[in-house]
Length: 316
Image (cartoon, rainbow, N blue to C red; front, top):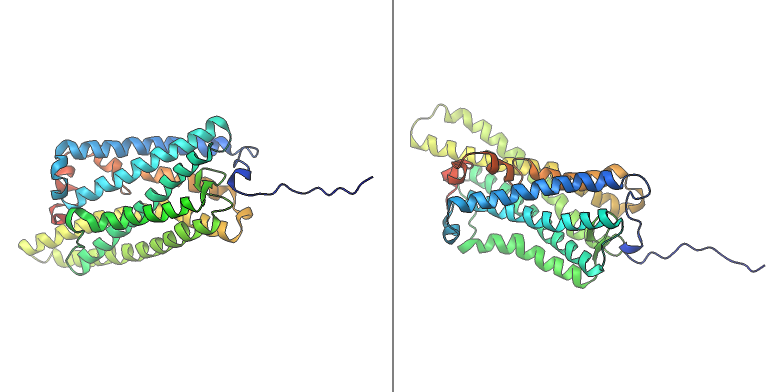
């Protein structure tokens, strides 16, 4: 009788990982709630864009107030994210397998990497802008046709995601298509976890400090009369509205940051609860008023589109 040694199959990439929850009874409870949230979020993002351009012409877009343009940018991030993320979730739900061919999964992962990072950076810009607005009384200049904002929020993620794709770092992670669950662990940590954790902490600090200053100065506003008091009050209302974006951002992304850190330290020990929280909060928080204000604009009057949501003080 010969000596035979049983060896575990070599895990080369994310396709060698089991589909998460398929044999543990978590499969449908993961993908179905995520898809419901994704479709609702996608619908509200599209509605936001339609309502925005229904009131004003596309040709005059860069003359809109800063708040109105930010609303559209965030809605575009949501729509693109949800379109790609719904496809990979739906594909996995129907086939009960990873997304094939691998190039398609890499494309979904590329889309998620770009628009997740774009939204993170966009909300960070909003938080910084609110902080500067309150403490300095000025706004960050986005440049002609918002080229500075667009290069930072969309250009930088596009370049980094392209490098990751060319290096073969994108693929299935067991739950959906993003960074490969085997080959892309380090890249996911550097591309997503580190910047997301920094942005979460920075946004939390800016959010707390800005709101504290708003409420502190509101007492002085009530004692002040005249035009200057009105302008200051409008600035504070605008900053408070922008801070809501940041608050819902924290609710949406904390699970992703925890997941990234946990995966980097010990991928095999990530609890099922964290997987569910990542997939569901990533989608469901997007339909809450305040993140990208999809629902806010959908359920309020046209006055919001005319500057009421963040007030005219946010005009360039």
